[in-house]
Image (cartoon, rainbow over all chains, first blue to last red; front, side, top):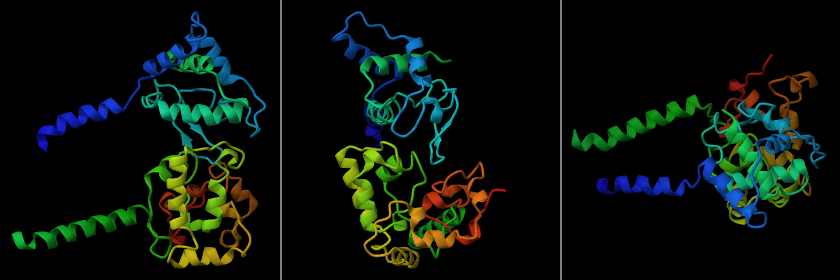
Length: 132
Length: 168
């Protein structure tokens, strides 16, 4: 059993999927299938975060819960802490594709009023990765 | 020594467990400690890990059927997680648990009604009737969903009256 322990760690690390950079590459690759010239932009990502939308929950913007500073802890309407969005402040952010997709899925519907496009996700992640 | 080892282990485990129970605000007269990985992960990332014993089974089923419009938010889940969490909630619901507090909660809810908010049950209303509106608006409380603001054991289902700390 002890001998197989290192192997176990390797397997566990293998399933922990993505780094923020790898996740970003996946989104960029998805956009480039239809738009080969696409380059994600920090400015568009930040604009998406700060834009005020008329969402179904009356939620104005991402910043309403995540605060204006993505390095800070946010708060849900039920007053539960939300770990910071920026990987610089929260190393777990954008390391689990299923989790990231789940939250894009829910929150884009709530805040933007529709699903976000792969291009928007690529911009968003690009901006957050750029924060030091 | 050898033959006493099992006893010793039992003793250490018991002592450790009771220490943990006290530390976590365990409420001996309250709801039993229950846990479920997906439930804690999915539900408690947005709000208190509301103990399943706080609502009857019919309420949990209705709530889990409408996660895409969950109190004004989209909380939808993949089918497998939704089923696993619904099963856990149903099995430990107020009208399924053999615990005094669970029975009281279940009995307080009129038959034929299906409340979705824990704070709507007559039991909840009665237990909080001495609190003024100003208390609920306190900055560190803010919402009836924020149980942990006053009940330190809320995420473990502990609501012992001795542990209540109302922020001033």
